[in-house]
Each structure stands twice: as C-alpha cells, then as structure tokens.
Length: 289
Image (cartoon, rainbow, N blue to C red; front, side, top):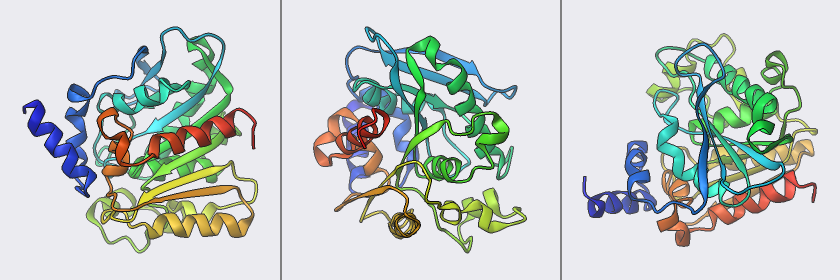
C-alpha cells in the first residue's frame, strides 16, 4: 500500500470508517513524536505468548514520570501491541511512560480472561515500571473500543486487581469510544466474547460504578455507529449519580476510529483528543484535582 493510499484510508476512518485493520499500517506513514524510544520490547507478564508488553518513554527523561497503560481495541478478538506504537509515542512525548500490553483474544479465551490479563499487566507495571522511569504510585489506564471496556471494567470492578496483587494501583482512567453498557448481547463479537458468562451483568462496567472510583474521562464521537455514544453518556450519568469524578468529551462528526486516529500526528487538527486526554491525566496523576 502506498503512502498516499494509506493516508486516504486513515482520512476516511476519521470520517467514520469502523475498520480497526486500517490502524495496522499507520505507524509506517505517521511521523513519529520526537525523542521517544521503546525501552522495553516484549516483556513477559505471564506465561502465554500473548502476555507480553512494550514500554515507551522520552529518551532523555529523568526522575519518575506518570504512567499510562494503554489497551487497544479490536472486538476482543484481534489486535497487536506494535500496531499502536503511534498512541504510545504521542503520550510518551508529553511526559508519560507508556505501557502497551497484548492480551489473550477470542477464540483462545473468553471473558473474563482478557480482563484478568489486563490486571496482570497492571501488576507488572506496578512492580517494574520504576526501572524504566515511571512512578508506580501514579498509574492510569486508558483504552479504545474493546480496550476501553477492559480499562473501565478493570478500574471499577475491584475483583480483578486485588487477586492480581495490584489493588488500588489505578489512579485514573480514560475510555475512548468504549462499550460500557451493551446488554443484551446482539453483536457476533460480543456474543463470542461474553455469551458464556454465568452473570452477564458482570461483563458491564456500568454495573460497578461507585463513589470512590478513580477519576474517569470518557471520550466519544457523535458519528460513531460501531459503539454508540449512549454507552459513554450512560456510564457518565451513572458515575455522576454515584458521586464519582467523571468528565466527558463528545466530538462532532467523529467516528469510531477517528477518535483514536486523532491521537496521530497527521490528524491532531481534526479534534483535540490528545490535548484533552493528556490534560486530564496530567491533572489527575500530578495531584491537581
């Protein structure tokens, strides 16, 4: 695929295209954020080949920086960490140490295995990130689409981090275009991932809202026809009613993939997703609200 055709494809995604596969070649044509290096390549946080992660940070960073663990989307059945280096570079260039884990996918596993993997990746981060310039006391999670579901379920449902030995590790969470309230299951990918769950309510982040939840930022686009914006508004409303800190950003004419591509260097002028996300994380992880 030529540079011109790939840029045309990603531009179409900003207008509302829903194919996550378009992201896989984005790193090849996206100018990198300067000074960022991959400090860890494929560290194991578990025994399975999918339980690996990368760590990105500024080359000249000193001291301990706030940390973001980013979970990619792909309908719980696809994705690989290398395809999201552009997200890691964008965040790392703005003063974060960024962890991007792979996790086991459907059909190898079903719910809750991929959330348990996410908890194990957070545990690895809490245990090891100081070796790579991160502050284990300032860890946030973030994700897009299925990754946002994983990030928010991990944040709100205490049953994952505690068994992993990382209770209280998450200090803030960001969800981009995530499914948080999607019962009944009516899509093939969701049925495959969650249809065997004994208690379907346990698959839904909205069922675990609590007043003492970490601060949450939820972002979505009003043109998203893959994960409807009502997921964001429903979770935000539930968090507010519970008295939990939550912020929402709704973007006009931005689709499901567009909200993620707005983090990449060529498309940041389309929406202030990166500035909103990093501003929230800097405030919350640096103790300013």
